[in-house]
Length: 278
Ligand SMILES: C[S@@+](CC[C@H](N)C(=O)[O-])C[C@H]1O[C@@H](n2cnc3c(N)ncnc32)[C@H](O)[C@@H]1O
Image 1 (tube, rainbow, N blue to C red):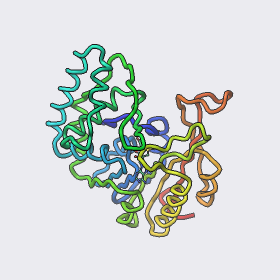
Image 2 (spheres, helix red, strand yellow):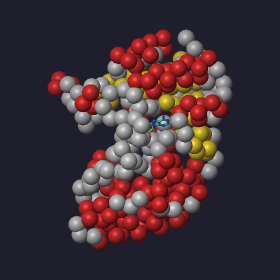
Image 3 (spheres, protein in one colour):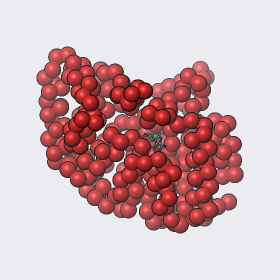
Image 4 (cartoon, helix red, strand yellow):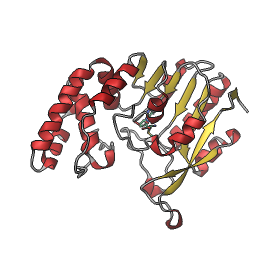
């Protein structure tokens, strides 16, 4: 099973490093910034609470759970129309111009998955009015519909709670022994790499500080928590007492000439070998 969307900040690159650090046993799995859910799908836990502030993304999760066959039919229609339209970009821009809030749930889910598969780099970016504005991706033969994967995901999601709220709210229910994986929008390594418009309001230093406060509260409650973020002075300062571990991710962006394509990320945990706190 693999994510049904490509998501900016998707965890494919450091998945192995994260899997090594997941506790052996835990109660409910929480992912408050689920995005494409790379770690969730790799673990496929029986009990989970998944959340993201992006309403169109969470609508897609719930349609896959509750009405996967209708979604498969809609995506097959998109795929056929896309292949028949010349140029294909014309079909892309026609779908992009639809107003997602006016679409019923199945159409809105297929709108998101179709655009994600065919847009530039699988990016999600909206303008100040919340209108999706990523250009066409020019892929030769993008995979728009993966029926088998969608059906498997649907079966897995049957026992899952889906939410679409701020991360802080969803974590109120986490209890001692539960496991939380936090993958927030990254603290930018430089001003030019600032990429905070995953959701309309962005995610700035104040939110990073608020998140560190929530991480503390989880630790006090005995909830197992693991967080990934970029290696920046702010993140090192906020989580100093947890001794952040450095892991390397290959990225298509280059930060410094001598380390083209490799950036460091930090993984922060409030447990080691199953023991909570430090
Ligand atoms: C780095 S991405 C997560 C990527 C994910 N781990 C994956 O493998 O694809 C961060 C996600 O946080 C969501 N987000 C941003 N602000 C949020 C907030 N305040 N509460 C919950 N989710 C938020 C964004 O919509 C985005 O999908």
